[in-house]
Image (cartoon, rainbow, N blue to C red; front, side, top):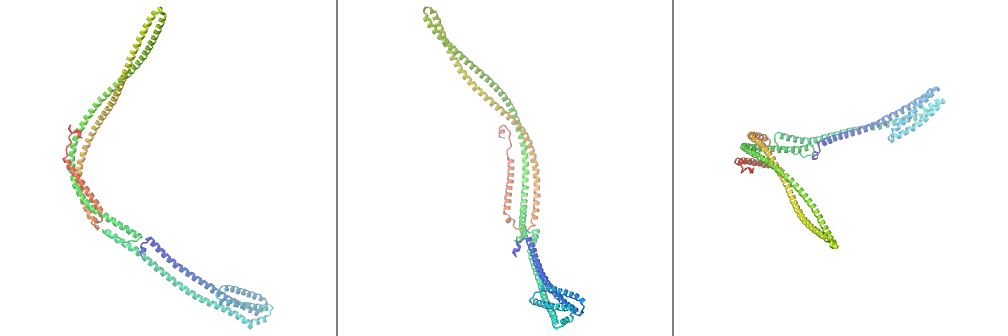
Length: 566
C-alpha cells in the first residue's frame, strides 16, 4: 500500500468519502431496485390476481342474480313486473360483460385464456337460452318458460356456466398463490442481498478508513517523536518519511528545519567559543590601545605646538605676499603708462612718415618744373640764335635760366635721395617701435599674470593661516578625543571581560543540545571563522607595532632647515 502514502491527505479523505458514498449509493441502488421489483410484483399480484379474482367473482355473482331474476320472472307471472325484472337482468348482463372485459386483461397463461374463451362461449349460449325464456315470458307462456329452465338442458347449461366460472376462479387463485410464493421468495432474496451488500459496504468502508488512519497516524506519531526529541535538546534525529502527501512534505520541512537548527546551534556553539577567545584578545588589545592613546595624546600636544609655529610663519608669508602684490600692481601701472607713451610715439612717427611722403611729392613737382624750365630755356636759346645779334641778351638770360633749372633739378634729386633715406630710417624706426610696443604689451601681460599669481598666493596664504588655525583647533579636539578614546578603551577592556563571561554562559546553554561533531559538519564555517580570527589577530598585532613605532618616531622640527619638508 505504498502508493497510498504518496497520495495527499485531502485526496485520501475525498477518495474515502467518495468510496463510502459510492458504497452507500450501491446499497441504496440495490435496495431501490429490489423494492421497485417487489412493488412491481405485488402490483402485478394485486391487479392481475387480486382484482381479477374479484372481477370473476363479480361475474359469478351477477350470473347468479340473472338466474334468480329469471326464475322470479317465471314464477311471478305478473305482467306489470316483467319489465322491471328484465331491466335488472339486462343490468346484470352488462355488469358481467364489464367484469369479463376487466378480467380478460389480467389473463397471462394459455390455460387461463382457454378457460376464459370457454366461459365466453358458455355465456353466449346461456344468453341465447335466456333470451328464449324471456321471449316465452313476454308472451305469457310461463309454463313453457319454467319447463325450459327446469329441464335437463337448461340446468346443465346453468351448471356448465357455474362450473366454468368456478374453474376459472380456482385457476386464477392457484396461479395467484403460486405467484405470491414466488414473490415472497424474491423478497427474501432481496433482503438477503441487501444485507450482503450492506455488510460488504461496511467492511470496505472500515477497511479503507483503517488504511487511511494508519497511513496518517504512523507519520504523525513519527513527527510527534521527533518534535519531542528536538524539544528535549536532541538534534541528532531524522524523520524517515518519504511519502508524497502533506505529512511527507511536512516531514521533509521538519528535516530541513532540524538540519538548519542543528547548523545554527552548532554555529552558535562555535561562535560562543570564538567570542570567548576574541573577547580575551579584545581585552588585551584595548589595554594596548589605551596605552597607545595616551602616547598619541602627548604626540598630539607636540603636534599642536608645531602647528602654531607653522601658522605664525604662514601669517608672515601672507603679509610678504601682500607687499609683493602691492609692488607688482605699481609696476603693472607704470608698464601700462609706458606702453601708452610708446603708442603715442608710434602715432607721431606715422604722421612724420606721411609728411615725408608729401614732401617727396612736392619735390617731384619741383623736379618736373625744373625739367620744364630747362626745356623752355633750350627753346629760348634756339629762338635767340635765330634772332642773331638781337637775341644775344636773351640767350644769356636763357642760359642762366637753364643753369638755374639744372641746379634746381640737382637739388631736388639730392633732396629726394635724402627724403628716401629718411623714409627708410623712419620705417626702420617704426618697426623697432612696433616691436618695442609688442614687447611692452607682453611685459604688461606678464606683469598682470605675476600680479594675479602674487594675489592668489596672498589669498592662499591668508586661507592657509585660517586653515592652520582651524587645524590647531581640530588637533586640540583630536587630543580631547584621544584622551576620551583612552578612557573608552579601558571601559572596552572591562566590557570585553564581561563579554567573555557571557560567552561562557552561552556556551553552557548551547551544550544542553546534543549535536554531532561540529568541526566535521561545518568545516567551511570553522575555516572562515579561523581565517577571520587570524586576520583580526594580525591587525591587532599590527596596531601594537604602530604604537611602538610612534613611541620611537622623531618629533616635527620647524627650523629654517626643516620647514620646507612639511
